[in-house]
Image (cartoon, rainbow, N blue to C red):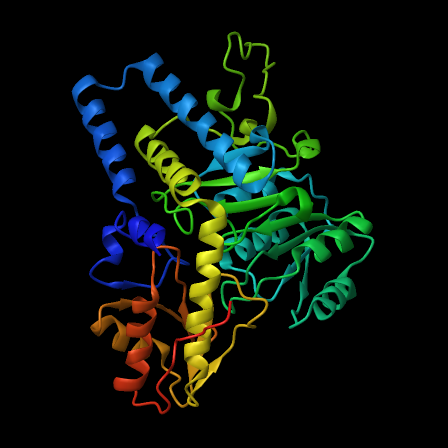
Length: 400
């Protein structure tokens, strides 16, 4: 526990409140805030000198790709840096050369960040959108997706972890099914990267988009997109600027020729905001070196077990997340209490941050490695004291 306690002290946001909403935004470590502040002060004093500023951004971004490549078990040059999960998903959806009548499969648990750009493809490029309804088991998921596949299917869009249920989807099996039919797979990894030990080489998906500001504890406006190396030349560039080209001159000519950057970096379009990129790099260093991704994953697994087992002690609570298929999100309902916004206010008054999911009428709890058992106890106490539910929980012996 000493390691966990040492890490917890680096996150001021978790000291005075019960911070159980990492699935929305991760807490920022003091080291990251310090690096961002010192970078901003240096820019204030020295200005943004053109070449040195751009060189600094380029070096920092290369280091970020190295660490993300290590996290995901993929080559660094297969990663493009983005502003969010949705940014990465849009790069893929606008980059695939769809033809009218091509089909894209989405599931009924997808986030709006994935659904909305798919809907726009239907409006602007005549793509047909097919809906696969999920299940509780791998077999049900495979049957649901296979049912809506056809010879015109080009892309399967699927979440690693469903944001509205907390279920970890069988993305390895779904990817194999899709690839056997010649279908590309794009994974929304917003609730996966930084929670599970994600091995994209094993998953074998074609695209994987995720944010830097949730489970990776980075600043706002950061994210990344993995693109399978063989597909770098398939994706058309939606945005392009000097940042999308090779770093040496001449990168383009007035006759219209240009040399794109090698790998996924060709889909980046700006060399700006050194402050946020240094912040993300510092957060990744902390997670990689001080915390350790193995520790983080095991810690989250243990804390979600405490939440799950504690909730099951209350007869008035329904846990909707499948236990064995959970990741970092636990969804639950209080029977007879449909107004989840009002329920959230009960926790807010106790200085406890959870998420109200109106669409599924659930509350969502998402602990990270910087939380502890006392946080879970305080959260569960609200159920007993404010909602006066029976059967006080016993946290001892929560199974992983």
